[in-house]
Length: 82
Image (spheres, rainbow, N blue to C red):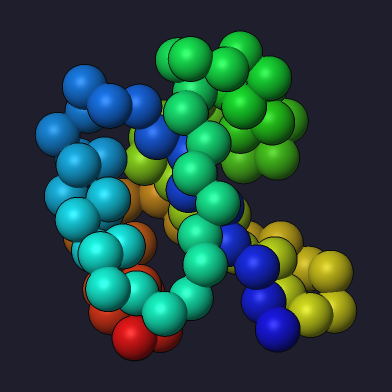
């Protein structure tokens, strides 16, 4: 089973678009606010290489990690999860 974490901050309109996609989603997505928790921002930079939000971290069963940026790509990906 893959795991998911969304890096975001509340004032970002693109983040809000993605957060709305989480409503009714059966898959659990961990929320990581990058403004309220500096450690989350550090994780984002260390793992994804930049501070851009929103960013969805996808950790596969085999431990491989993908960092998905672009709100429309994230929303589309989440819709597929159902």
